[in-house]
Image (cartoon, rainbow, N blue to C red; front, side, top):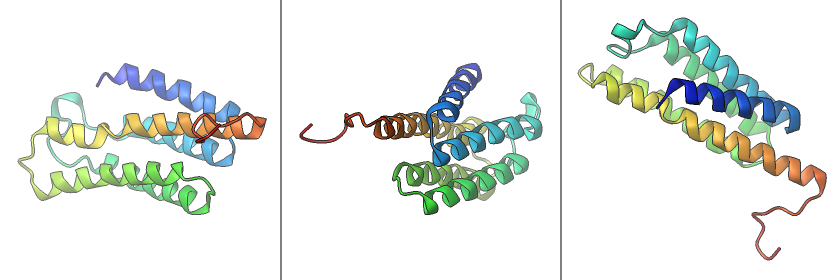
Length: 145
């Protein structure tokens, strides 16, 4: 996936969550942008990226998981559980590379990067649904109108 596309989507969704979201949406948005920024500071140089376990990225992903889990455990909404669960699959990707050093760098990269897109999509939908709820608008996902 194109890193520029992800960064653009991330910035748009984070701004949306900060403007229209509640506490949960804002915390998750700040965790996402903080995690993305921190990852840029610790990831290996491009020519060696994903050859071995990205220890710094793994620690950031672990911290993000704990942050997302904290939001999910306090929230009355369901979407933070999905975000925490998807982040957990990212940690599993790091574990797979640790268990098998011969795992192709491309497969390792995909296993830890792929879940970022659904996480920001879930954050966007969660923010939209919360905003509609607060505004008193009928939820488009409710059955029977």
